[in-house]
Image 1 (tube, rainbow, N blue to C red):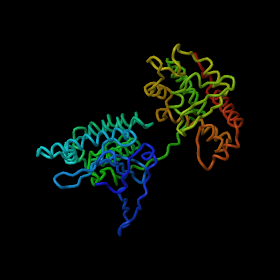
Image 2 (image 1 turned 120 degrees about the vertical axis):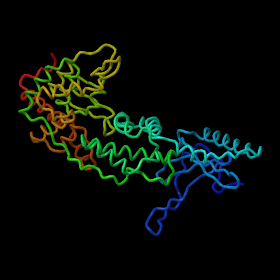
Image 3 (image 1 turned 180 degrees about the vertical axis):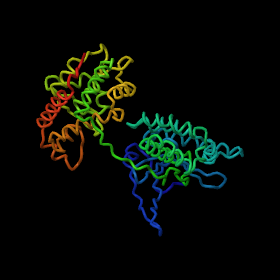
Image 4 (image 1 turned 45 degrees about the vertical axis):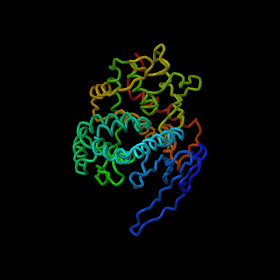
Length: 410
């Protein structure tokens, strides 16, 4: 029997399908989102469900022993294409029909999935998360590190359904003893893991998220930056660093105010010595960030040796790669300079602070650092390149003067 809202699905229909059902609220004010499905006439039982968010998933409707059942495919659209979903639906329908015809034990995919849910552990969920979700995130590497360092040692062998709010609160508190910022990031990651567990069928939809309502630590915004009187000691410590590329990278932080990821990914083709600027694509703001090069910054890049066959300005140990982890070197440098509370990101903050103390306006500082805020976009547009270039030129002169003998490249 044909279903309501059934059509012969095409790629165009699938792409344009939007949530059109009326969303209501119950007597307690809770949202009621009716299931919005478009059924396919070409594959019995196959439907495309769309959520109010716009997310689309494939569902399959069938009957077992007189009971109507609906199962959602693990892989959503567009990863699972229309042709792939049709093939999967026909395969499932064939198994169900064959078992029924032979009077064999009924095939019930939904019941099978529910049984498997009881056996899945945190390790399996984390593996799926890293493969299906984290790989597409900019913070994917950090997620992987936190899973390996905090989540798997604590819960790796435990069943997903066994994790309680008290377990999450306990882990959050334990991590917070050594770092409250890190504890809050892990808490957020745990929350996402359990949301994905429900979305991917690892847990029933009704299962509550144990990370919800766990109180986060209050984070105090850092305002640490290198004071002019601290720079000479830092300069001496930088000069002692044996790796020329790590030495140059730290100097580039101080002279340009660029983000760590921007500098690490910088290639020689991004440097324009004629225009005296560094072109940094794929920034946090999602656009190209042009940084004018002051005289000291230009001299730094001009003297930096190029590694043959490697396009990166700051090459790593492996062929054609860039520097990845300079944490050990930075710890050594800041200990030598007696600045053990200074993080790498504080060097970028230093540029903004020095510009501020020199009288630069907030919009100008934002332009230099590559910030984008709707309230200042119009102001940025009027600034042009000259104010930013002049600001960094002045900053470079002040930085080198305060450093008292800092050598750009040995």
